[in-house]
Image (cartoon, rainbow, N blue to C red):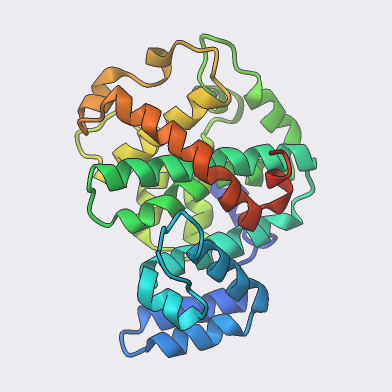
Length: 281
């Protein structure tokens, strides 16, 4: 199968709920009020609890207590709440995946690390629309789970990366396409915004000339995460070239700060999105 066919079949298994569709419709409707959005979220107690937990986490660093969904929408913003809704329903959808728990824990840890890294870098660099960066990082590698659903042995083969290989080039050798392609196709099936699909589709594009800042940041954040996980024995410059950092004026010190930020925030995010992984700590 090609990337589209994988995503097409996966979209029938990993489905975002009717609640998500209704919330998306309300957010897209300019006439909707905060209370309209809050009322639909409250119909799903687990979703409401997740949003409140994340809203009150150190990730958002709000000095007071956010104790209602309406207040969460008002304080952290509609876009951030929408991102949390996407995060909740995505992690829930993939709970249907038949996979080893340790594998899934590792997958979500890598995804959360990428999400935290890109959000940290974007905030520090004052990139416009930085509020959607976290969800880019979290969803960037969903294609791996899709392939795992149908051909887990191929995922295992893709993970066998030598010191002179990179995960995304190994995917091309084994599959004929990258996980990024499948991720983008699945998000299209889910009818998520193009502003999310484009950077995820182009995350491995080496040509930065026409890339958006979001795409460049995802490229960098993914490779920072990879150096801390799958490629921790690689030469750093072989995974992330200095010229790519220079394109956004990213200093090496900022990357170290981003890794420290991951270490501080990882547990609180995993504890909400994937409690099993948080038990590793």
